[in-house]
Every structure is written in C-alpha cells, then in structure tokens.
Amino acid sequence: MKKLLLIGVAALMVACSTKPEGYKVTVNVDENLPNDTLVFGKTMKDAVATAIVENGKVVFEGVVETPEYYNVFIKGSRRPIVNLFLENAEFQVNYNSQKPEETSVKGGGMTQEFLNKVAEKSKALTEEYKLDSLMKAYMKATEEEKEKIKEIYNKATEQISKMEDEFIAANPISHYSLQKLFQEVADMDIAEAEAKIAEFEANVEFKANAVLQKCKDIVAKLKPVQVGQPAIDFTQNNEKGEPVKFSDIYSKNKVTMLDCWASWCNPCRKFNPTLVEIYKKYHNKGFEILGVSFDEDGEAWKKGIKDDGLTWPQVSDLGGWNNAVGGLYYIRFIPQNVFVDQNGTIIARRLDTKEKIEELLEKHLN
Image 1 (cartoon, rainbow, N blue to C red):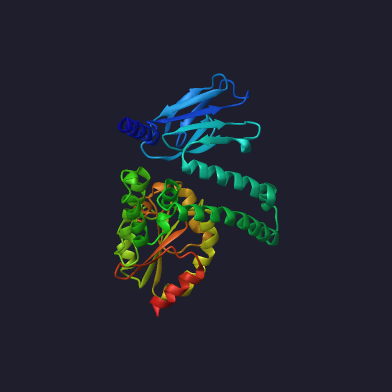
Image 2: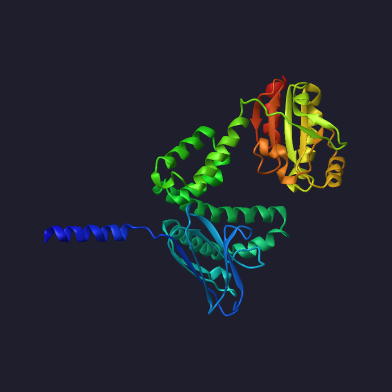
C-alpha cells in the first residue's frame, strides 16, 4: 500500500512538472473589431498565423522551440496591439481598442510576469511624471526646457532600469536575462560576452536556444574587427564611379578613419562640421578619412558631400543598410567609425566625440 502511494505521488509530481507541449494565446477584443483579421508573429512579415475575429476573440496555438518576443497585429497595421514573451504556455490577452494602454496579458511564464510588472510600473511613472504631455511639449521646447524634460525622463527610466537589474541579479540565467544580453552583446567586451554566453550554454535549457545562437553569431562577427586586429580590406566606388581600395588609403597615412554615414542620417550630418574641423587640423599631420555612405540615392549622397564640404575620399555601393562594409565591420548604427594605422591594424572603434577623436590623433600623429 505504501509503495503504491509513493508511486502515485511520484506520478503526480511528474504530471505537475511536465511542461505544456505548446502554446495557446487567446486574444479577446472589444466590439470595435467584429470581423478584423489578427496576425501573430515576431513581425508582420514573418507571421506564423492569421485569424479572423469570431465572437470577440481569436485563438493562436502552436509550439515554440525558443521562447522569444511575439506580437499580435491588426492586419494592415504596423504597430502591434500587444507584445508578449511567448513560451509553451497559456496566455489570455484582453485588448481595448479605445484605451490600448489598458490592454493586459495574463498567463505565460516568469518572464511574462516580470514584463507585466514593468508595464505596470511604466504606466504609473508615465502618470506620475506626466511623461505623455512632456514628450509632446519636447519638440517645441527651448533648449533649457528640453534639458529639464530629459532629466525627468531619465529619472523615470532609471527606476525601470533598477527593476531590470534587480531581476537579472536574482535570475542571471533566465530568458529575460538572455534577451538583455542579446540587446547589449554588440557593445560588450568580447571576453565578457563570451563568458556570459558560456554561462547560458552550461544550462541544458539554453543549449539549443536560438537567441543564444544569435548572441554567438554577433560575437563571431565582432571578433575580427576588434582593436588590435588587421583591418578587413574592401573596394567600393567613389562618387565618380571610380574604384577605391581601403588599403590604398590607409597605407599612405599614419591614421585613417573609416567614417560610416549617410546623407539621410541627421546625427551624421550634425557631426560633419566637427569632422571637417578635425580634418583641417590633422590632415597635414598624416590623418585621412574614408567616408562610407549607407545611401541608396546616389544624387542625395553627392549632394550631401557637397553641402557639408567633405573633401576626403568617399565610397559607397548604394546598398543602404545592406552596404557590404556594414556587413564586414558589423555596422548596425550610424554614424560609426573605425580607426586604422598605416600598417592596417585597428587602433580604435566607435569614438563618438571630438575630444575622443582628437585624443587618439594626438597620441598617434605626434
């Protein structure tokens, strides 16, 4: 009898600990969406399912191998009506089309529970600091007023960051922690990034995780373009259609800056006058710049060069964000730069102020 009781308890424990075989997301909508089609997926383009609203709801079911963020869209809309962290579990979504901020997500796992807490905190902070009205006023505010608005906004976001830091400290090997690693890995020291990845790999739950693999892929792409590594050579055409080879530029100068920019990039255009000033000051001492444009419109690129008075060599394959140099050097935002010495060795990356650039040039040109 005792043996049978123990077997029964063991079976119950197994049953309770067994994870669901798939997910079930029930989306309840209000009467304003009687026959709309809802789309479910990471983005609208890679939808995994679509369904027409019936009796005020839609149910999405399936199996997810790697827990990740998913969205529910109204077909034809770019903005999701809800974002959730999809795991093989049950979810209840209640969407209010008149007050989208009151949309709620129940169910899911530990990550979704934490996201709900963050959402609640964000909503409370938005009301407490009147962030909605402040953001609307920001565009018309004076510089002094903008600084005050930034201070208030930063004060609110610091509280959210504190919540995240505390959660990650308590749950270092969790899906939420992995998502944060994915967001930050490109900016981390390579050794630190590899150590973090190794911690997740040591846990069987994350061994085959697709997000972890993405982190590994990013590190693999970044390794060859770290300080101390040889610069990756390439050839692209200048604005006249003539081929220019990177190594032909850096081999003739003490320091060459690879400047990734575009005519449509406002931060790039704002920094160009500063870059012109630096170039005039250090060019005769052995400093050169090779501009790599992430433009698609050749005429806009040429106009940007002329309007900003950029006198240094310029190249582009007019591939926009698909520019080949962006792939070689893992450029995911612009403006961004890489500095190379005369031997073709990378000596610095991502220097974002005049002071940092001039400090590097003073060190290597004197």
